Amino acid sequence: MLKVEIRTDINAKDYFPDSKHIIQYSFTLGERHYFRFDDPLNTPYDRALKCLVYYREMDMNCDRDFLKAHCDAIDNMLLKGKFTIQDLVTIKTLNDQLKQRLELPKEPDLLYKMASVVFFDNLENPTIYEFAYGERKIKFWKKNTTLTDFFLSMPLRQLIPYLEHAGENLLTFSEMIKTETKAHLATLSPLLSEEQNEILLGKLK
Image 1: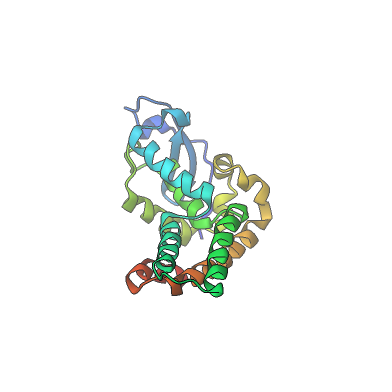
Image 2: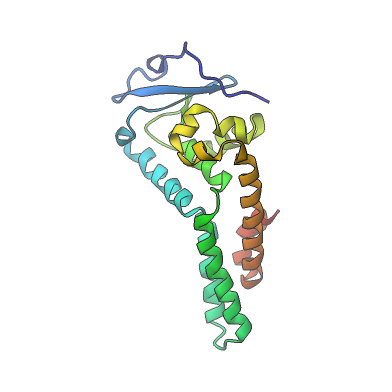
């Protein structure tokens, strides 16, 4: 496994000499150096918009797929026309799940997505964010470093204040939210059509 390093010999200007905004070096993992904009308000338009997408997901503690599955499940129940007491209990359960997500520790996958757009490596164009490249970065991070080593490094803790309080409990919190997420998806899955379930199948594994 690789360790997150904070080096003193990396100069952002050597990698992004034409940048109109101040870019600062953040950390190194393996042979890749990662950077971020010094002032978040100066983040270029394309990257800022995609950062907002991930920030909203992290704030709600669920991604678009989860919300869509929830809406589809409710729609499917409403289209039945007739309600039983069990249907009302199920709707209450689904509503409680959404409320619970706001109180749970942050979903690790959402933290990775947020980090992938804020931190760009020395091979990226800092003005844009490519979702496919972001996914490859996340896979690299997950494969080559531990959850705690990655997210408890100083740059990441500055990005996400929640991490300051998670500390050594981050791994425990991570396992807890994964367990709860699978339980929530398992509740949604029987209420969805085969087509609607396609996206959820991978998340339930």
